[in-house]
Length: 192
Image 1 (cartoon, rainbow, N blue to C red):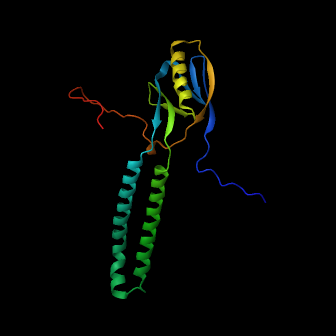
Image 2 (image 1 turned 45 degrees about the vertical axis):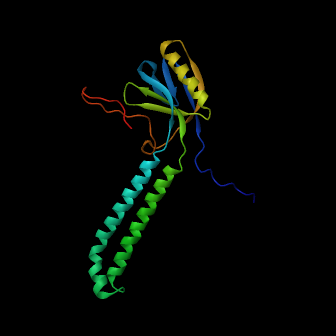
Image 3 (image 1 turned 135 degrees about the vertical axis):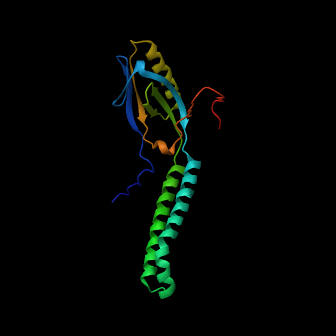
């Protein structure tokens, strides 16, 4: 039997068609009317590593606190009847569940810590939707920004290219700056 190579650590990017036709931008099966596009740009989408570590620490601490509280009913039985009592089994199960939860949270943190940054092209609409695609060549995405911008101003423009579909959890990546501004007094812009 020939050796079978191990599976790739992450799934290879799936090619997807990006095309402009009849004043519509198609990204795979998603449709964006060109007149509704508010912004087209490229950026490096980086994993939220700091937040992942802090989330793990918060969840691990919460698991320990819940574990201590959950084992309190079994402590009197364990203290007065010894390690052969039913309380010892109850306490053991509580700590086994706490350990399993902590391992789950650790694996979740490691998936973010080992994730790579992606150079992406983002298409934002005047509504709430955003389309993201990626390519192995950042210059290709920069050229696409120009082509899409040109197509917005020139209705007869049509083109078709192949890019890669990006499937990530938005909870694990920075998707650019978020600005929430209420009122008009004392605004200083984005602070970091």
